[in-house]
Every structure is written in structure tokens, then in C-alpha cells.
Length: 115
Length: 112
Image (tube, rainbow over all chains, first blue to last red):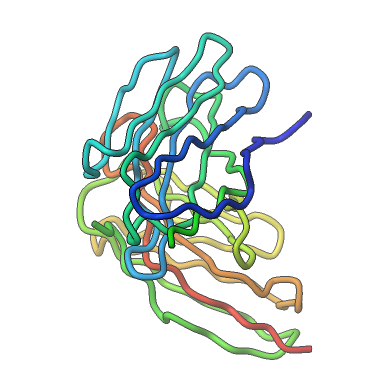
């Protein structure tokens, strides 16, 4: 069974640009969540989607957005990039409706560097 | 913001020794999970313990949970060099949905 696939793995952007990251969950998983990891703030929750609906959103500015498609694949977009957006962006998928019954399966992440 | 604080921040041991790391959290939870992250990679789920459980084992891993103290510990017995990684506790923060709140992590170095 293929794991969670994130693309691209590495990318470099300049301030003011925008970026789109993609995540393909494990087959059959309908929940996809996104996390940002930085040395200073650690792992921070961005948002979570289930059946194309955003169910939960973290404390990030509106420049961070996402969506989920009918095949459960998800994308996140960051507009007007800032230096502080440099981070490892992790996507995770889950089979369970809630965390009461299962764990998250993470992809390898997309490492974004903003110059 | 971080839900959990982990202690110690870094731990260096020799192969064969046991490694213990602790996690404290702030709010009530439904369950607590531990994850491992090799340098710059994705997180791998290790073990989940529910709020009504006190101890759980999985191979060389032993996790305890004390909800009265809002704390958990992860014990890795007979450590191997391959256990070198960062370890994070994560709680559901009683939100119900798929939002994990991660601790600050413990960096474990196991030397041959």
C-alpha cells in the first residue's frame, strides 16, 4: 500500500511569490491534515479536510489556504510568501473519522525555502 | 501554540541503554500519541494510549499515562543506533477531530 505522497519535496521561492503544495493520501483515507514545522515554533496545525470540507483550521493568516478534491487529494497554497514561511510542510492522512480511533500517517514533507 | 512540553529536550545514550522521555500537556485529552521523526523526514506513529489506559507496550516501547498529572512517558528499552531520532508526543486536545497538538520534542542520540 503506497504511503502519503507529497510533492514537491523541495522548493525555493522568493518573497512575495506564492506556492502550491500537493498531498496524495493513502488509498481509502478521507481525512487529510496539514502541519507546518519550523525550528522556532515546532509542529503547528494548519488545517484539516474531510470529504472536501475544511473541518478545522489552525491559527494561521489567510495567506494560508487549502482544499481537498473528490479523490481525497489535497493542496495547500501560501500566497505573498514571507521569509518566516520557510518550513517543512507535512501532510497527514487518516482513515478514522476522528482521532479517537486511529493515528495519522505522515508524508515526507515539502521543504519550502523563502529567499 | 504547543500543547505539550517534552523533557528532556535532548538525550544522549549508548546502545543497549534505556531511554526515557517525558511529556506534559495542558488540557484534558481523549488520547495521547507518540511519534518519531528522523532528521528532516515525516513523522512515524509509534503508539497511541487512550485516556482510560495507564500503560501500554509495543515491542521495546513502553508508554505510561497519568491523566491526573497530565503527563506521559515513553521508555525505549535496549536502545539501538537506529533509534536516533526526535520523539514527539501529541494529543487530540479533546477537539474530537483530526487535529493533533504536538509537544516540543526530545532529540535522542544513541551512540554505538
